[in-house]
Image (cartoon, rainbow, N blue to C red):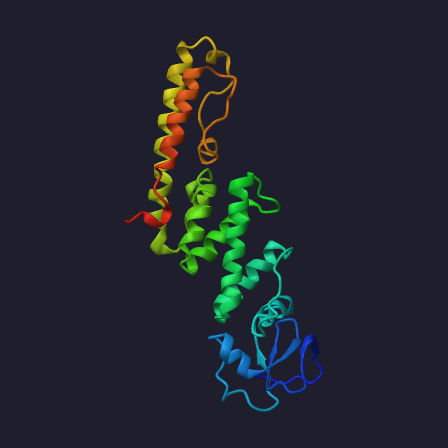
Length: 252
């Protein structure tokens, strides 16, 4: 704990009747009510502590804390719509660290929304591959298996060495087993297509030489101009894709 009378006060959290003060890593003071923290969080000091002028220093930046602390004053919970992914991720980790109940749920639902939007619209908006890995780390660390199930297939095309350490030690073997399912199916689908292509006058002119992991995780290679037999092979592959075990259902 430390005192700093010259520090800048938050424009939102500066009530005169506040009885506990936090200081962000960039020097902003947040004056809150211990009663609200006790009711809506499980990771801050109890009500009977932190008396007097002392302030509690936190490692998070003011941008993160300003979002986080709004969740301890319901029902005025902030909207997370339009919050940049990097800010959302910082908020999600802070919500878990300090056990801010409503914020934990809100961040989890936002992560699911981003992933489900990708699956349905086939677009990652502003998310990058590194963002997907960050989502995996967040979900693995906090055991959000529903998020793991949504994000796992999106990372399958990435090399194992670049994804394995996104998972906790307990889940690394599960990830390897999950990914192996896709690799086996990819080899089988490629072999079936190439065997057919060799004898098919329609398909032999296709520039497609293999079925990739990316093709599979997006539902199968799309080549609508190929023959009916290829369409049947593709349909068979799509059925097998639906049979892939979810990440959460794999047991080592």
